[in-house]
Length: 421
Image (tube, rainbow, N blue to C red; front, top):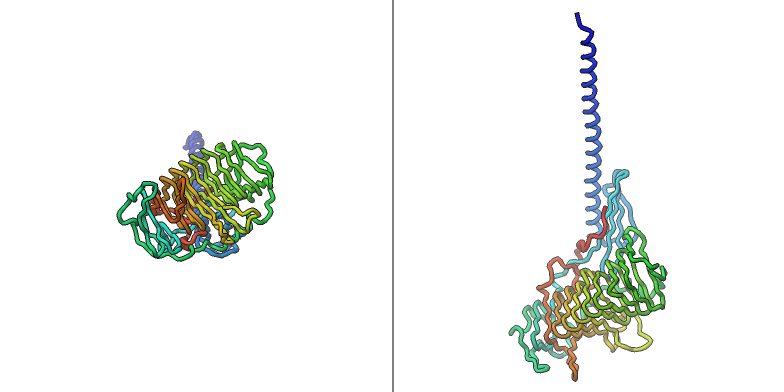
């Protein structure tokens, strides 16, 4: 005969078995949800990688506007791609979504260097030799005039460098520099000629940050000379001025573009930005521009008053990126790039006009110029390089060039990761 207490034991056992079974079902359900979530996450990451590769390898102009499509021609996944010109570089924006899950990345990208066109120095042929004096070093392949390279005795300084004069292969240059990319120049011409509308003040903020997933935040100061101080500006922001714009050392710029007639960067500035002007850019001493930065001086029409457009870089400045000048009219008064003592440029210098390098200027990368100047207290010497260093071997193999320049290859790579979720 079964005892009554056995019924309680059976109920308890049944309850425990029920709880265990329920736990297993719940665990299986949660595991399935996590598996599906992980699967969707992996799928999103693969789609982002695919979108990045499409932007890096595509020449389709339709990507300048946001374009959404399915990668594999089904309704299970979608990707949204956009390519935005950003100064001398490009910005890529990739957004993918599967059901309610989304993933995005924004990044800048640029061109690799075409080794067949690369040179430490390209000096156009004006039927005169290229002269070196003092402790001058030119390391890397060069394109120089047929008259060749020679030593010179200037300011009581004889040549003290390597006996080979040029530590690399010497080739003969043409009478004009290899041209800049016309499509990119047309984009800059639109920036300088079209009326820019936007906020006229910085609204007293100490931080301004704008995502590249949002419309560009434009500040237009019109014809009012503006001095920017005590503000941190980063991201998808453009500053415009029809006159002089002064950037104080208390300002931090990151990935920002600036367009003005004249730009002054005060001593001690640190940042990473692209500055473009039509008349002049003056960088004062002890400034530090991180990679990738740009100083660009461009003239698309003749000025009312005929004067020499100029980029001047002060003492002890460190700059990483691109410095260039361009004159559409090819005026007799050529644009000038002038460096003071102890300037270091890591990257590329493209001077459609004149390049004047002073004592202890070091360029780790490449120089393309129509003419060199050296100026002392009494005399101006043309195509003389004195106490300067041009060393293409010192440039990082991971350096990427703007598509604006003639040495850029078709292949593109990610330059900088900007935003991701």
